[in-house]
Structure formats: C-alpha cells, structure tokens
Amino acid sequence: MADLRVGIIGCGRPRETAGATGFGMGHLHARGYADAPGAQIVALADLSPENARAFQAEHGGEGIYEDYREMLGRERLDVVSVCTWPALHAEMVIAAAEAGVRAIHCEKPMAPTWGEAVAMVRACEERGAQLTFNHQRRFSAPFREARALFRAGAIGDLVRMEGECGNLFDWGTHWFDMFGFYNDETPAEWVMGQVEPRGGRTFFGVPVEGQGLSHVRFQNGVHGLLITGADAAGRFLTRLVGTDGAIEASDAGDGLLRVWGRDHGGWQTAALEGDRSFGGTVALGVVDLVDALRAGREPELSARRALRATELIFATYESSRRRGRVDLPLTTMDSAFLSRDSADSPSP
Image (tube, rainbow, N blue to C red; front, side, top):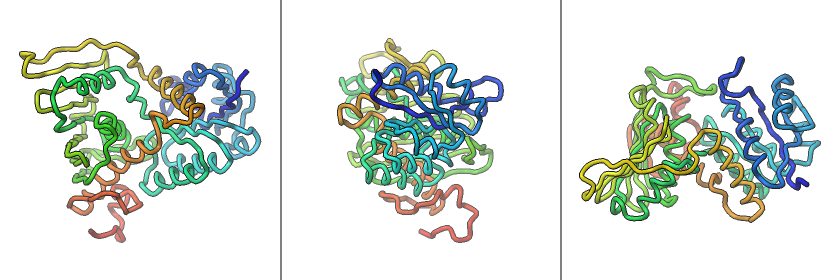
C-alpha cells in the first residue's frame, strides 16, 4: 500500500507529440514515482483537462484539477512535482510548501530571476519541506564515470572545468550544476562574464543570449569556463582538465567518455555502463528524492546545490551588466539580462 501521496502540477503532452509545446516532463517524473516503492500518483493539476485525462490514462491519478491551489488544499499530498515553465515555478513551489507538502520536485531552470530562486528555497527551508530540482545529468553514466576516473587519479589534480552548450539559462544550468558535481560541491568565489543578446532565442518563455562566456573561480582554486552560443549548441560537452591530463564527457547521441593523459599516447575512449537516457536519468532523480525523504538525508538534486548553480547564471548576467567581476554571494535580486534595457538597472 502506498504511503506517499503524489501530485503532479503540469501534466503536459509527451515530447514530440501533437500539440506539445515542451517536453512533457510530468510523464518522465511519473516513471520515477512508479519505480519508487510506496509512492503513488493520486492527483493531477493542469489547465488542460484533456492533457490531464491523457496523463491519467497512462500513469494514474484519481483527482483531476484545473486549479493547482485547489488540489493542494484538498488532497493532503506528501510529494508534488512542478512540471511547468520557469515563470510559474516560484509561486507553485511556495504554495506547495505553505500547504504542508513534505517534498517538492521542480523542473529546471529554477526561475527567471535570482530573487525568485532564493525565495523558493527560503520558503521550503522555513517550512521543513525537501526541495529538489531536476538536474538529472548527475545520474547520467558519462558524467558519473568521468568523476570516478578523476577521483581515481586519471588526470592528477583538477585545474579547470569546461562546458559548451547553447545558452546559460536553460542549458547552462546543467553545466554549472555539473561543475559542483565534479568539484565536490565547492562554492564559487567570483564570476566574470559577458553575454551578447544578438541571435538569442526564447526558451519556455524566458529570453536567453545569443552568445555567452562565464569564468568562475571556486574556493579551492579550481576554475570553471562555460561557453555558449550557436557554435556550442549541439556539443553538450563537459571537460575536466587536470595536471596530468583531461577527461571529456557528453550524453548527447550515443554518449562520450574519453581520457587523455601522459601515459595514454592520445585520447582513449572509456567504456560506458549505466543509464544515460533522458527519461531514465529523470526517473533515477525521482527515486533518489523519495529515498532521501524517507531516510532524512540530502537528495542528490537538492535545492542547495541547484541554488549554487543558478547563482552562477545570474552572476554572469550581472558581470556583463557591470562590465566587471562579481564577488559572491550575489546580492542583486533581478536578472541583469532581462533588466538590461531598464533605466534603473543597478550600477556597480
């Protein structure tokens, strides 16, 4: 018998199906709850009853609501997944925490502004709610095995981490999070960056840059470098550079894990074992957060870790606005990228 009652906010349509405007992440979250012992989806909230009924037919969930607040008020939920666009995350996460939900799992990116991201975490901390964000690549085989190789001494001491992707906000949140994953969750000291709006796009309702560059220094002296733009959009690559070699990892396509070192005579491809599928890693994150709730431990996808990654996004935007280095913690609560045309943008 299930002892954890689960609700989904934002059922959506599955990825690449007719009428889909996103990835239908609720369907992937549902796979995780199906794999987590004792967790059962009992309620669904979606503005589209059609989407909710289609979700119900596939994954269950007896109660269907158009108003998520009504669902939170009536269903006595233990766990809630928030699978909506970023502009809605803060209000929904805070409402779930205020309703007494014990664990909240939210899609990434956290929010369109730094202030909203901080507010979500604070609200959950004040009410004792476990908050997680779906940085599912922490469970993907190429990155986990890359970290294992580094920890085993394959490239000596870590000097620099690098990433390439399309933009800082929607994709960069993953790579900033992976910097923490690789670097033992070490906090950052400062960020220096630049963004170029030309050629930018809008992802899930939030404008992003056409090109970007972010340079991060961590408290242990390791540096991070993230390059974004059209040239990097299809690479989805991370690189660890050490005193004795380098490791490259990607989960795009068939995945990539390769090592170069003094004794290798060139790049050597390493074997990949474990899940690296999009849906599979999302499900693993859900299973982990349910287990963490039961055990009283920090989940792998914890809000503490997500907030550190998100701070690097908004600190890069702020550095571009100031045209100078931004020392952390970040104190400006807006998004300097979204506020770039505002006459009242803060000065350095």
